[in-house]
Each structure stands twice: as C-alpha cells, then as structure tokens.
Image (cartoon, rainbow, N blue to C red; front, side, top):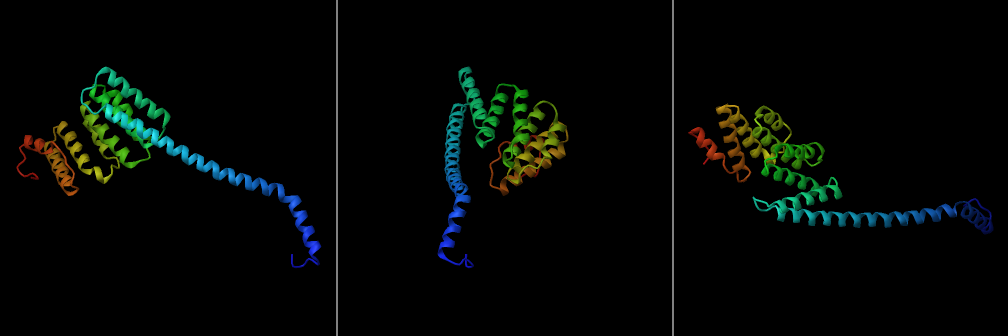
Length: 219
C-alpha cells in the first residue's frame, strides 16, 4: 500500500480486493461462528450423554446391590446393561456396566457369559485399570473352570500396580489349584505384604495361608 500514488488508488485496491475476496471472507466468518456453535453444542451433548450414562449406571448399581436377585430384578439389570452399552458406547460407564454384567453371570453360574463379557472389556477398553480388573476376573474364572495354567498366563498381563495385591492373591489361588503349595504360599504372603504396603484390605488370604499351615505370615 505504501507504493500507491493516491488515496483514490488505495480505495480502488480495497474495493477490488473486497469484490474478489469478500464473499469467501464472510463465508469464513460464518463457518467459524458455526464451528464455535457446533463445538459448544457437541460439548453440551457430550455432557448430557455422560450425565445420562451416570444416572443409568447408578440405577444398575442400586438394583444389583443385593446378593440374591429375583428374576424380575435380574431382567431389569440386564436391560439396563444393554441400554448403557448400546447408547453410551465405549464410555467408562459402559465398561463398568459390562463388568457388573459379568458378575451377575457368575452369580447365576453362567461362567461362559461372564468370560465373554470380561474378554470384551479386556480387548476393547483403553483404560488400564478397567483392563486390569477384567484380566483378574478372567483369571478367577479360568481357575473356577479348572484351567489354572490359563489363569497364570492372564496374570502375566500388564496389570497395574494398584491391583498388585489382588494379582498376587489370584496367582496364589492358581498355584494352589495346581497343587504347587510353596508357590501358592509365596504368592499369598506377597499379596498380604502388598496389601499392607498400599493400605488395602485383602480378605481371606490369611485363612488360606493358615490352611496351608504357614508358620510365618504377615499379622
């Protein structure tokens, strides 16, 4: 603009530039505004979905709080699980609902359905803690199915350190199922030590050690 010889020429250049670029500039402004509006709408939608999933999951937890469910309660629980997983995809609530569904299947003695549900979570979840829970519960199912070697393989997965005590506990169960008493004792003692280190309650392990006649255990 500094090279232009007059204000008229400057004005002419501005008019010509606006004629050539004004439409696209307006469109850009409109699109930018639409983008902001769209992002805010998407954020609001996501928040609404998360709130809805939270409400449904809390309903599921409340419904399944008891150990013995009636047929109607079980049917309602399964319906809620389906609703959460269908409508809320790969959210944390969907994964937790699937874990709970696996627990219900175990309570009903249906280990195959429980295993399928846990495998879905272990394979699909992007959350390390949730995957670790699924691996631990799958290992317990393998032990219940008489496959302790498969359980030990599952326990070699990268289970997070926060669940190390539970991991050692289940490893002890697997060794006990194999008749490997010393390995079971070592694993259970490790479980107790880790539980104390992390200030985590771990019930039943001391009784299992007592059954082995362990002389030196964590008090």
